[in-house]
Amino acid sequence: METSASPLPVVRLLPKANARAVRRGFPWVYANELVVDRRTRGLAPGTIAMLEDSERTPMGLVAVNPQSKIICRMLDPDGEAEPDQAWFAQRLSRALSLRARLFDAPFYRLIHAEADGLPGVIIDRFGDVAVVQPNAAWADALLEPLVAALVEVTGVTTVLKNAGGRGRTLEGLDDADAVLVGTAPVAPLPVVMNGATYLADVTGGQKTGLFYDQRPNHTFARELADGARVLDMFSHVGGFALAALAGGAVSALAVDGSAPALELAEGGAAQMGATDRFTTRKGDAFDVLTALGAEGAEFDLVVCDPPAFAPAKPALEAGLRAYERVAKLAAPLVSEGGYLVLCSCSHAVDMTAFTGACLRGIGRAGRRAQLVHSGAAGADHPLMPQLAESGYLKALFFRL
Picture (cartoon, rainbow, N blue to C red):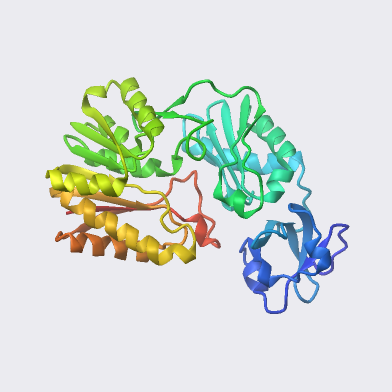
């Protein structure tokens, strides 16, 4: 594209902006990289516009939100698309073809935001139910054609809007959940993965109701669990604990601060016929780890999968100290030759920094470690190589 003949609004990069990064696939433009004049400030959040470099050369079709630090999100570098139902259907079909190849049942993340060509959009599928998180203003504005395309491509009969994502707050959007198509389920939905049964509360649970991203790490933990005593900290609905029980664990203790999440975990264990091997403990994870240490408790497999301690760079140092503290408190609970699994879903913490924090904590506990496996999110959470933030999940499996 040499010149822009687009009838759309035009937004322009400042001369100091890194136009080369955008041309190489980086999907965002920050507010301090754009000419933000009165006309641009007046654009409604979610406006579709043509992005130009400082020399007025078109660079692609973007969604603009003057209220967000990420002021532009790239939709189409060719600049020729029209984000209508057909356009959404094309992107959804491409995403579905990957998941259909990966999984033999329709339970997965269908859309993983930028990596699937729909910036800021998360869609998790639970059979005939889809949960959409439109975490960017443009997707919120175009929710109707997006949902119509979703029904067209997948055949789902229920579509729920989950407005609890942190990204919606950053975009200046509401936090109102909604039933967009069909009828909301009246009970948690059973999801079978790795031989375990999880109960997903898609209307009142955390995020979309289940964390599909940990599936391959659940798989690896299951392989370590035969005959093991297992502790699953920050368990949510029993992610690692139930996988371990499916793998032959003799016992599993799930710890979480949420009583409803632990009730769902108990329900999953009951459906698996594993109630006699499963117990729960409600409480603050740091307090429970400290108490278990004082009790002299010992486990063959300990998993700590906390929420994001460093969701953004300003929280990085505090987050790393928190990960170190988790490792220091958890390591003494691991039997000789047992396994400690430490996870991070913090965008701001890279693998090197996370590994360092974990090893410092293990060392401060007086333990020595072998790193036997490093895990990431499953393939239904593809990585956009140009956007490091899309590779957020890290799981380290240590033998102590």
